[in-house]
Length: 548
Image (cartoon, rainbow, N blue to C red):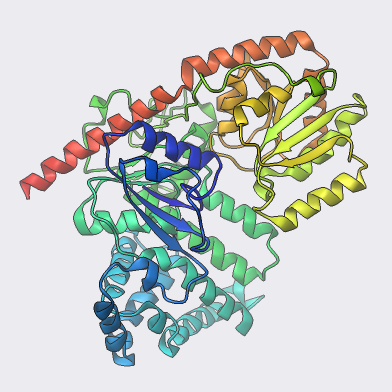
């Protein structure tokens, strides 16, 4: 299982999902390929107590001097030999052409993904024999990088208007040095790989597929390419640096969507990105999808009409010839997240909050959760309910600068008595009991556990229309909460007031929400679907391997 910045070293929805699979599928031997920010991490899930987790491979992107310390398990003499043989002649003859191919594939749109998958694998193979630091910090690598982008800048009208500076080029080369580390790492031999994000982390899965034919599962939570676009749009970088980061993310995502045997998004919403970025391409290796049972739901226009603009775009760009109401892409199979309804269940509101209209949120405080909009919605709601209370439980360490912005806005709007950034809560199931409603103001989501957990606890939700929030809360007559546009504090605040001032509606949504979770979003339903996907792929891989 390949993941990035999550399990088992960080909390959050993706880590919860990973732990549910590892804990419940105890007859499967797991190897965790964990890409982390730095090597100084601790296991928050006590996975040493799960005997089915056989290995944890930590791949830090920063905070190291020698990549081999974390990416190479061979004896020191072999690693030292790699350094000795990494000469300028070796770099020029073995690496430069591969590096140019990678840069071209990242920056231009006319390269096939099958070709780029083999380029990535060849670069991986190169670094099994030569030293990463010496190669990537060599004058040859730098000149290759610099000359490629300066040449592109002279050819492209858009870049001519704002050509890259020396600072831009060195910054992007440094970023690439760090983000390339997962490509270098030793790839464990497994029967199946499962990537939890369509990023550089998943390159290990693609390398395994190219080298060994290993089947690959990809589960999108938040859509990586979309979230990189959002982050780049507001980042304090030059246009060249923003474009570089966006194009790099796009290449990694397109590779993942092309090479994955099965794409299992946690919401139909994600298919709107997965399809045009490579998910439309037929998986010729698997021709018996119709025989698959209990392996998620194939998105279709009848159940999710929001996909139609995506289908039209596929036709417009000649990616598919046509479509109708029966058009499906059966290798994309939505498997909704599930929650433990014995743990997350209705409970009493704490005595100290009784009589105080309360909205509770469980979210890490960082930009994608858009807590600033939540704060502004509190100001809107306070105009109708003077003693309203918002309580946000979640890490305040993910982005200290953003936390400070939130505190400044709370002070500016004079909401010190109404809005509380309360930090980590050790019992999230009980945290929901504090709220008459729960709130989620994200600008990007997958299929948020916090929404499902709130519904299971009988607490109605006000959430933004991003990712799978609407699919979780329900549409039309199935709705058991209120969905509002993102970044709209007026609509958000008014929805909170509506629920807090209408006890009958609150009770109706409370009952209906838990019923919806019990029917659709229980842990055993989700786990069973993944087990079946693994089983089908394992059987197919075993047959093809035995026939060779």
